[in-house]
Length: 236
Figure (spheres, rainbow, N blue to C red):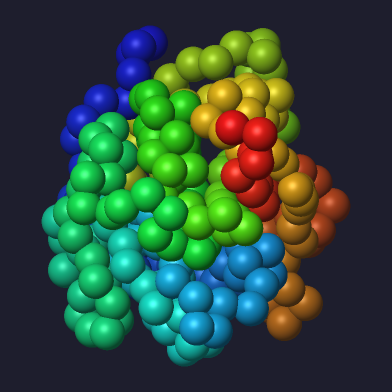
């Protein structure tokens, strides 16, 4: 068992495949993205930081809704794809293990951090940086794998915080952290956030025929993702 995920940009090796997978796939297009976009609310005229921006699918939708978008990803190829997809945004290669040195304090209205927290070894430090760049009244929206689903799939103690390595159905080999929901909430608190909302989303009804077995399972079991909206703690 590894003691950390490490510094490798794991998605770089299959960034183009991931774009094809996530553009219209059930788990991303009809499940994760709608939930996070709902939690972000009206973004028109607001500055949004897309942390771990991937190939630009979030950024594209945010710009279409009137937002100004800046973002970063650890994978150089993901950043290339994002720039191609969203030429009006500003994107760079950056590791969440490092400070966001190019962004001043209180410089963005919203942060979206979708399905990437589990790849970060020092999550509190990364979340503190996202807290630092948020303006008063701003919000962080993040999604992560549902910890109950992780536990059902991998076994062991639900409460153990550990790194696992697995090969996904497309042959992608990935390392990431398993952690109970309590740990994520405590990390947000330690970073200076207050939890405002938590969603255990269900896929959108229009996706019912996309992959019927997965759709029905996600409608009845906590085996997919969850999404959180957290706001800066004004006392800190």
